[in-house]
Length: 182
Image 1 (cartoon, helix red, strand yellow):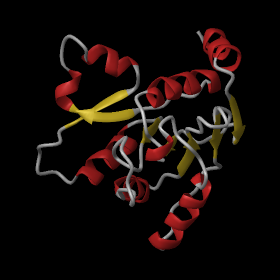
Image 2: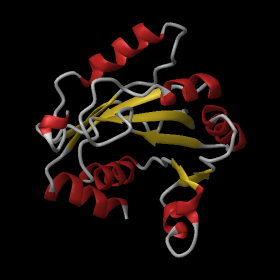
Image 3: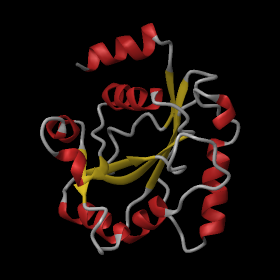
Image 4: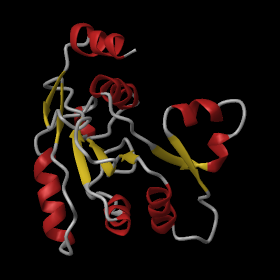
């Protein structure tokens, strides 16, 4: 399957990977992976292709209602983990528990929380990484340059403003599939 993904990603679509291309060889088995800018449904299949190209297992969380018959099996195969969004349980702690309970868990998510243009990122991913004591790995959906840039693992500090400045700088100038939402 990896050879087919590489053929589609590199040859048919003409994309490239830059930055931390050793992500699959790293000893990082747990991380919060943030992907931005998230402007289109095309980001999903590009992310699935990229994880196959790099041979790295990634996960995502979704409301538990998505994980029922008939489509639930597909979400689990794709790395999905159900979470009860209606429970009174703190979501950050519930997701951090997924990291604790699993030997390998790399949760991919969008810091924007939507495909529309936002002026401010959501902070949940940051607090999840802090609570789970795992690094954040950033990667871009740069449709203008047809590339995914991947960062080295970054451990959040106790200075959220400085950390967000650092992360925003990584994504500066990157244009998503729908540039006006970037």
